[in-house]
Length: 314
Image (cartoon, rainbow, N blue to C red):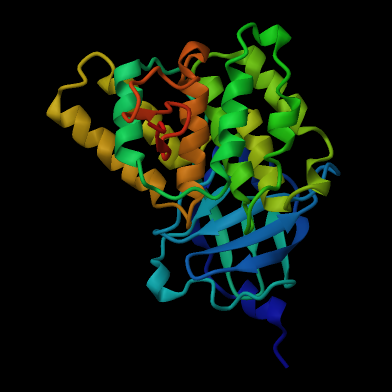
């Protein structure tokens, strides 16, 4: 009888590209893991690589978002590339390969996920807000406003972010609750803007007990964001924001910005909008994080939340 392992050993390794943070795991010695979840366009693997909790590796079809813990498989989602996987099945990662019960993938290259330094302007952030207005988010807007108020406290050394941050950890539904996506986006934005003290405060406020409060997938993505890694879509948006800052009326740069925004907003049900909400928070100077004065009955825009446009009661 032919075993599953021997069947896989005869399968030609398919070349894949991996996010840079996965390099030590994929090039190190073989490590056992398991399939965590399987979807049409992605599959999630979990492996205890360093004793600090499970590391997540996302196998991504060509249509899936470019997460900073992802491995891009060169197959379209309509081909159902992960149909042979089931939650709980064993996998092995290391020695430049990923071996499942049905497939073998060979590491061919990596892609950069490091968050770059970005200069933005109020005008550009307003463009971002206007484009994203109306997109649903996965957390109550009041929680985002509370986080914005904490960030707007002035002196970062005196700002107590802990209640607002911890109120978002694990808040929402799904494998990556909306509150976690907001915090991941926030840390990416803070790093891009060079606001290292606030970034450190957010990271400390999330705390070492995050694994007890949210999903393993979110914990891994929060860890990567804190270390300065972002998704392909988030980095593309940061590049577009940086490019348009000196000439916000340039049609080519505006088109680039719209395309990058659409790509980020297209991630998940609300994950992209939640990430964008946090990203704008991180990029926005503290002095602009409170609502702008407005005439009664006029619409005001909270730059801290690109999806929230509220009206002042007459």
